[in-house]
Image 1 (cartoon, rainbow over the protein chains, first blue to last red):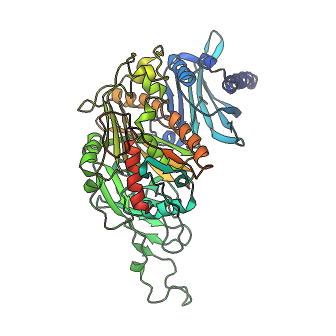
Image 2: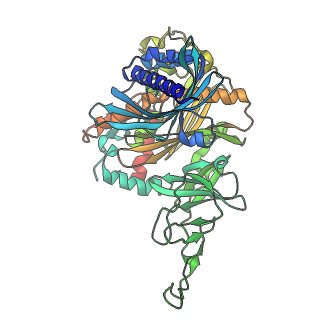
Image 3: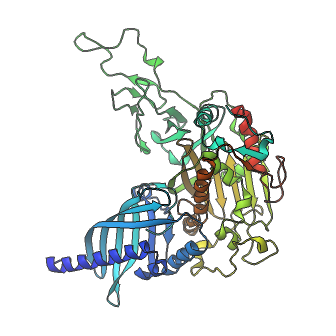
Length: 160
Length: 404
């Protein structure tokens, strides 16, 4: 891929990743499924399972509808301590472009601030993404969030 | 040591959740004492030399499959100077070698080699009377039943069958019936609360019908369904048993603020349970003293191992499994239903949050006590779930073991 083309794509991905993070960090969970295709795959996976080819994920969604169900359940059924979350995303890389599928990766750290507590990095890992264009806009056909921090501090309430 | 309130097990004094002396006594009398502690599944170490690193209480141990097919559990502590020599969670080895001075042990923990034992150029080395055979790794008692491995620091333990007892054994065998298991993966979380609050939570059917909106709304566990609470003779083990109902209002749901009649899933594949066990029950949550929870909720199966990390923190290690004979549809079903469990679980998140909320209350008011009078003031089985009997039973045994 030509350098200028790659750089433009990379900027586009960085904007998308920042918008995704802001959506979650600002608590606008109802918009989160819109970042995905209808038949998407979204999983949050501890690295030990990923590295050993074990299929279990801590959060597993197989469609945009399931993403919406996760949000609805969060809003209506979960009980949890109030917190602020802030994504730090870096190292955005284009891995490959095959036909219309863009494979990309980024690293993330998720900083959590609980009531009465100092901020901590509650999760750190990488995104493994496959993106496609729908009406020109990039959407996640697949987003795997593989976290190194396999010992989750407390609870993982929100999508990463 | 402080005195238990005179009301007996209808009260739990809050100092048990934070006192370091209590914690130290628990480590000695419970985790290193007369208990069978869950350490893993046979399927995690299938082949000779396969090992798994884990903890009993806070003590590091290693499970390993021997060349003859047996299972050994060794203290993860070098006989030389105490190093935790095994630093990987899983792997396969022919022997264990401590990285510091390369003392080498076989898979049974026998010391096989000490580098420079005879010195070098007639200088140094071990005394002539140093016997390798006297310096092996500490070995633990091991018991396996239907693919589930337990270990104990006490060499004179009763059989696992006697330890579980006639009330609990059939419930254990219901899930672990001898069929080969398949490990689907792990989840781990560090919960900032005393370990006993985790056990109490799984012995507490009262909250299940009220806190867990997801369970209540989808009829997965609800007070208006046929249920029971069963204890073993000592009170230390228990099981909560229930049967799935429909998502519809009943006289029971009227008092539950958590029943949402209009909560429908856009993608119902999350919850499409199939009946896979004999009998009427669709959920059985079993607690096995002192460190194991056996989870069977619809088709999501797991062992949850409690690893204590201090009076106010413990780790919960979830091992999700199915059976080797599961077809792909069943595996997928289990993976989908796992969304209910673990650190991000639509049901279990409520519990880990409540345990942390509990700890921040009880730790600061150690002179106060919990009031456990639901269902009466005794310790007995119940043919319903509106009771705290299983928690009272736990503390009845706890007080005996702890001398409180």
